Picture 1 (tube, rainbow, N blue to C red):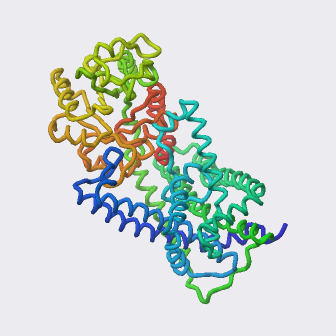
Picture 2: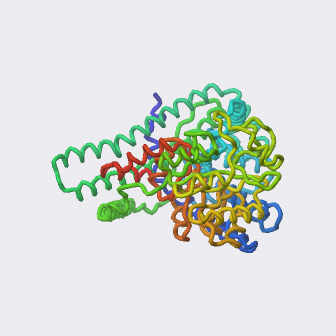
Picture 3: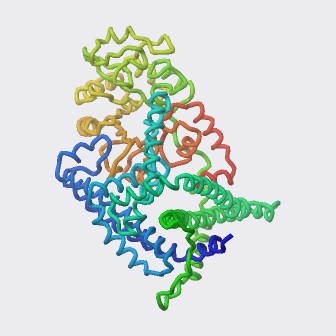
Length: 589
């Protein structure tokens, strides 16, 4: 094997890569903070504290909203430039054997920004930022690398065969497009091509070499799996096994806790450092392939040419600081063990659409099932009929649940009551029936749903709830922020909750009592910020075992789920954890 093909030349790049990573991340944090401040200023000018899925139309109706959209696109451009283009330029320097100051590389990346301010450049930027993460192929940026389709949408896709096929075809098409144009940025940044020409050139290279590229990607994927296994073995399993052997028979609980925390915390730090190298080395390898495919010859990493006297990186000092911080934090967590690693989960379980998947959807029978399962609460959906009554139904019409394509607003109550929910003899329930079934048993989260969710619905439902003396047992929720704001403004004595699946701004300051966050947006920082503002947090709709365990060990007040039985089993298991399992759960968060 060619000695230049060994990992050694790449390993020598690690300190320099970390330096690049630290500098560009610092710049991105500063730029993101400035842009965030500008966006919040524009939001506050419109009287809002946040823009979210239930209050986004102003973005297209006001000049402030238009500027916020421009700022959002600017963020994506800066991330592509500083988080990706800098890596490509750096890889080009490595292959030329030159050592360029970090600031000079960053300046070159920023100077290239205007070349992307055209339809082709905007398309490439949006693909990298928004499509590549969903596809899981091609170059990505750190800001959106974990972007996913919201689970409430993906669950519908998975449950409908036609949607599943169409979605798979769409992702495949996007993946082919991404792979075919994976060298587009290289042609622009390294060879000075226009974006359109570079796209054509990338397609030509991939047409000739797609088999070799596919084979390399398979090897790369296997190497990543091996790297992950090595990280787990070296940073976690081996130290924990050694510690277990050394502490066998030791009764000092505090010492065992401290050592376990120290090992897991240190392993997390080391894993983070290794992970920070994955993308730069991936970009370097893609750059090598670009040169090899272009030139038709094998490319090796040449010796670096020094750029003069260098100031030594105070690596030893940074290591000492890192070790001191890790040991100090481990000691603090061990001394306050029950605070950082709670003995029992306090997150409650709310059944989705009545009794979740354990009973017919949105029925009295489903609500009784939720009560029997010991659920803290139950969520239902209501809509108004043509004659002004409120019935329980989730979809716009009754087609899925009762094989009737009419909407509640097109039917009278007597017509609705003749329907039967699929898979049962249960009629479509009324709001009053659900309130009567829930009274004295659980908290009922009533979602004001569909086109009839308006001020009239708010007024009517509040009076119905008050008539039954259930203000302390009912939370009115909606995806329409204006509806929730109306309730909070005119009926402050009524508990309300705003459901959202995306947004930007000070979510925690929205005018509501409960903030319902879609699971992929429910970050620890958002939960903490909401609690700091006195708002409770609901996470919807974690249904998988992994997602339920994740959020049941979080600081969320409750999860809304279809799988109540499974969630109960997880709660019982979590409450029976030993010290080690409690620590693992916390580090997982």
